[in-house]
Length: 516
Image: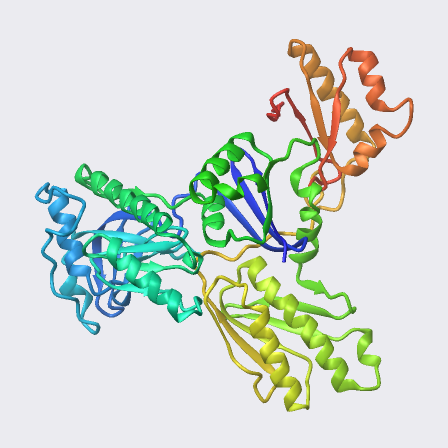
């Protein structure tokens, strides 16, 4: 399987598309001004406890308080609180824990108010991003992840990923980590560590403990709730978690982002730097790889399958519901075989849609009815295989007697929602607009204004593909007339994400020229 990572960077947002064999399977969007990301570590202050929920609300800086349930405290919560207070009061002068006297483990079935008096300071980590009206969810089980390993302070355990099948390799990794890890630090060995040399693992432990040192230094000078350690940006975190030998290409449209990713690749996988490319073309990067078209076709209410069948995805307050509908294939004589074929195709598309939209919570799928028990088992096994590449934790149940399949999928951030229906930019949905031909007049007026008020500008114009075709349609095209009139060549670019009457002028640096 070929994997490609396409990164579209803009001043306000970074969009990351993951392609498998040219097909869009994941889309991530990250605002440059985002306050929380899963994995961020904060100094939090307990504002109030809720005995009825056995939970607490903490101030971690931004306005909305964060939620911390008793089950997310972890067994070392008392040691964590003690360490936080000692460091803040400068009574513990080392980030390492070999001389730190740990407290007894916390009870599994205790009460939150017994652990957290009001205004208690404690290190916390974002477990889930804010979703809808809910603030972020926190955990006190601090983990610092790397590509091969994850370290956990205040623990001595070494756990090896169950996905490493070889018992000899698991034993080798466990003995190796136990010999090189710092005291009172636990380690989780990730699947990517399989076959790695001592030097690689030792280097990563050093990098991860350096991050813990950074938390320690920030904590020593900290007096109020704030972020102490930020998770990697979305691009780097995806690279860290999914980069493998079958990754064939990483393409970025920003020189700054390209250099940042290159430096990161050099640190984690120098042999993979060659797959990184900088997109320099005039065509938008998402158009170049047909991602915009796939987004438009994948995020509607209905998704059509190659057979002509289709699935309908709807969200309710309690769950997401998927309905599988037959197309012309159901006209075949053997109805049960046709149902199985459509259901198998639908299952593959549903698995893709769950990843693509990052749908979490409860999902109920209404497949086409099948009478053959073997077909039901075959569909269940196929669904499990289609979901294997999904990094989110999930549980799949067999088909019920009503032909329904239930899936629960981990939700750590809001589901991706992209509006595929376009609203007229002129009438704003009222149904009436100025004549579309007048957009050329508007472009010319803005062009004349820019030429009069900017000294020797080097301009480019980005428009909808149809408008570009009109402006360049023949030998005496509008673009050539502009060159004769203004003695300056205006390069014209197309962006299929633009609405028909939308246009933008950009300067020589590619920055948008604002005329309002």
